[in-house]
Image 1 (cartoon, rainbow, N blue to C red):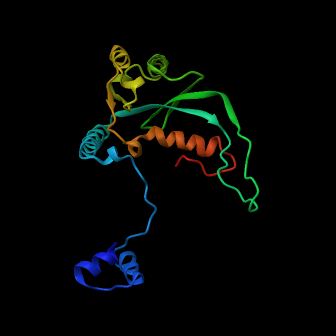
Image 2: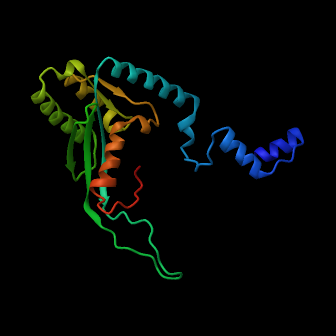
Image 3: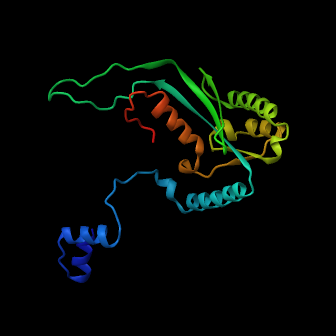
Length: 212
């Protein structure tokens, strides 16, 4: 693209090797794999919401607020082989190591790195989420009766968390909560906890997984 633009707009014929050298050495750029994101992820609305969300969260953290991030994941296969060497023409198959029935995990992580988790064998809906929050509140209260004064719950836009029933229940429990902006995966600590669980604890061979 750069070569074409130089030729069309400046009538300059520059070799690709020269262009690559300028981009890498002089401008400090790298030719990296593109990470595709949903089209809606970078609309003006989403970018603005993420910016507002980031400013709000930074303000909370600067004030010493304890943030507890809650989300769910599932475990349905413990075979993380994605590639292996095989002769040309041979079938490259491996047995699945399925978890049956599938395990659903609700997990919370706070700004101090404390983890709270529960396993179920049902789909996570608002009833399961509210049950998890009930038990989490008991645990937090046992640790510190005044935890509500300095704590905020961070949830995403999933229906089971943001539906009327769940929001009403959170208010009844006296919990302040923040709903993250759309497509804020990189700013969601619980995603890194899920990644560590699947990459390390459930993957003793250290095979590459879909989690980073």
